[in-house]
Length: 272
Image 1 (cartoon, rainbow, N blue to C red):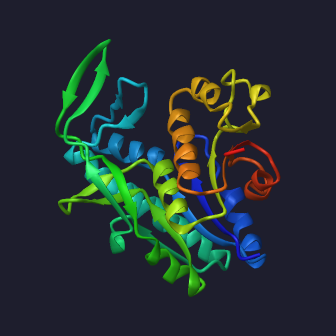
Image 2 (cartoon, rainbow, N blue to C red):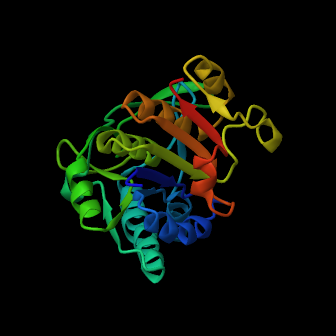
Image 3 (tube, rainbow, N blue to C red):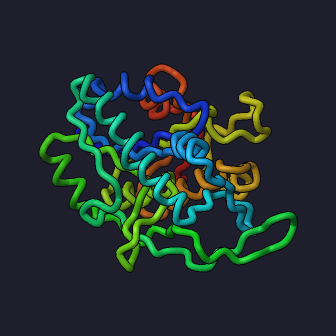
């Protein structure tokens, strides 16, 4: 097989991790090389609530939502993403005889990002500038780190943290991190698993699933995307622009989610 897959497993409420973890040993036995990128939204929210911290979202003028990562929230996110979720996934995979290695984008300069030092946000219909946020826009991925692990038979599990251009730790979007990694690796596909069947034309109606998106129908897909799905559509676009043949938005909750996505389930983005 020798195909390389980058799989993004969402970290929000309603995402089921077990079907993917159960499927991975079989995929590896078939010869797939797999990099797993994960989110940590639900875990970070729970830790923030325990600490009594504000966990507001930032809405950009274009409608994209992101976590407000002020300094105290950054520590929470690091603990949730690089600690709790990452190591739990690695341990769960090890129990399934998958030799997983957990790391974040900070390790080996796997992900380098530029901090967003002045973010325009929309609150109550008005724009304001936020200057204490520690989120970043990814500039590059060091695929050599992952190739060394893959060539040695390991399965990398990547938390969505990046190293800033000034050495700071930054919260980065997991979907776009996965897209950047997929492009840098020359992956055969990017698969983004979440708690919905794919991109829905009439959210949350599952029967309104948009099954295929090409360059000719991309504008319609962008218009259909709501909330967090906007970032997933953007990640799919970025993967294709980086040379990945296809990007698939699919359901984490079904049996064999990766095989189903590769067989055409979900929303398949391709150039043609």
